[in-house]
Length: 308
Image 1: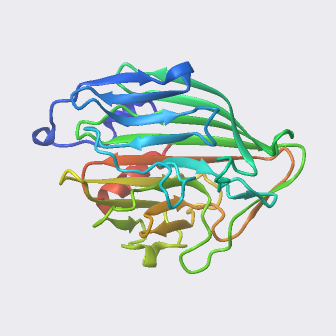
Image 2: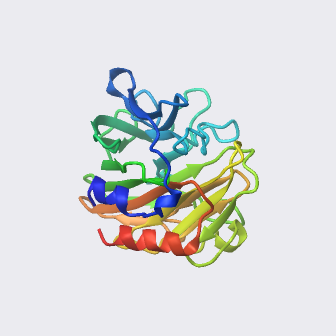
């Protein structure tokens, strides 16, 4: 989908439209990241961090168009949670998820080899990364080519990030695995969203009608929304959509209102073994919106995304 089409894919009535905010760009030193800034509030709307010195690439903050932060980065209870990020749990029994508190690194490394940033005149953006998964000092067991398309802000202030990742296995078979799910633990891996510990009054909504983590955790769905009141007294939320071409679609989800945290967990139900040289592609849309999630509108959004 083109950036223009993405910006126009969710229409609103003229009476609901507000003047577009004054926006600008902020680049990180040494071309390791890019942020969209609300120039009125001087706050970032989003920042893509692709710094090889960090244990993993991530997007923080993920905020509403006025800069109200919705996500948490490296909270004390799980310092390896990075707002919006992607991480495998185990590759060939090696942990790529948690980090050692002394070194700040995982046993298995997610190495950023290159990152490229392209800015659109309508404040859309494209971020491209090349990533390798490997043990320290060893050849990669898998490579990833990741593209994140940040859509132009829409008339109602919502914006979407289209996440497209292609993974290619190295010279030997690999197994992608997770901690086996039990009660409200285990099963998580892949694209993930972490919210502040003090987030209250927010609730889940899934394409299958689940309204909380007890109903939706471990269940398959086309999309999941998490929304509620912000610290500024407004309402906002984030929805993740699973593309129908993804393996194991509709995916199982890990939902946890306690952290809060949620993830389209490709390997929640069972591990995945990939042959040497095999390639898989994962596509998601992340929608940041300024209202409570509504099933009919989110289903239309999923159908628009699914056409690509």
